[in-house]
Image (cartoon, rainbow, N blue to C red; front, top):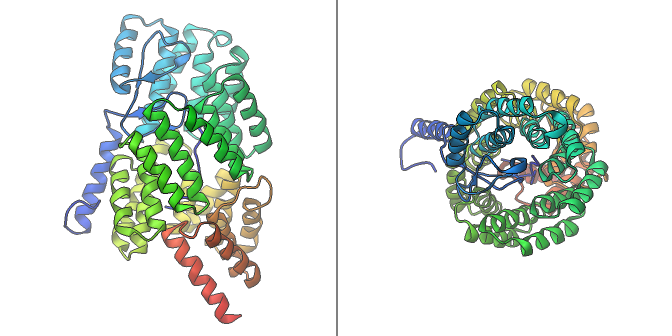
Length: 461
């Protein structure tokens, strides 16, 4: 799985007080974890919108999922496997469907079921002939954030079938998340030669963005949009374009892309989330709250909960914001119980809104597993939250280094605040200014803090 990191930082129903909001939020999480209708695009990032879900059929080679109803397809396949328990392809397909259902509904309890299904498939068909189950295991490991295992499974699948789109895509995802950016570029170029299409194109664009080639990323996505035929594909690619524009502070362009995505699929949650974050960046708090409340109602995962929490916090609704942050902890505990590594998400949320010591523990743990610009940023910020600014700056510099070239307003903000804590006002002014110049609304709370810090530096200069 390739998790786009667009540097989003993170409805109340009717009237009532904070207690009512807590009830509504908890019900929303429960509803998501028991969802019976979810969606996803075959071999691409999860689509939590509730539209155009895949049909699961026992005879689909390679575990490929096409358009239809995922939950109904899973039920049909389960019934088929009770009658034909030796269908190795069927078990691999069921495992892949469970992975997608977990990722799209936010329910990590599906991951152990997926693991069992892939295991059954591999018992029925040997490893050297079962690329579907191996590619499925790669996607499962990536979904659980075990990217070293994902890379190993993807490599084994490709030795069986060099043209497996799922394995090629998972290999790119794993290399990106491990911080092995040059290898990721080679891997995505290979994938593009072997299996050109939207799943690979969107990954290609993200690798280019990570290398600082924003124009190249945009060109790749525009070509992918031109080739998109289904409403689901149009929504998916247009949303990626919107996220890319948002990262650069190009809010009107971002709104155009998110609008195109929602016209193609009015229920597409990532586009609704992107539109809400863009409204927030422009100061349209009421419209932003409307969109983000709906997102959290349907897809209450850490990034979305934090986005709504920070918007409420910036508006002075601290009690309501705290409810969002508490729900992140609830999801994190459930995810960990089902084998999902959540340390990166935990580190950032805890550093900003919770237990600084726990943030540092989580960040160090994640850094020991993978050394990407995102883990470097998280570790630096957690160290800063614990007053360890000398060490923090080392990691903040890694997150903002010229190589691979990724520019993030959030990363620049973190570095600037660390430099200010160390008394380097000149460097702090440069990086805080750069963060606001790149994306002035990168976070409802962070942008406000950056502006306040800059004002303080100017007063004392």
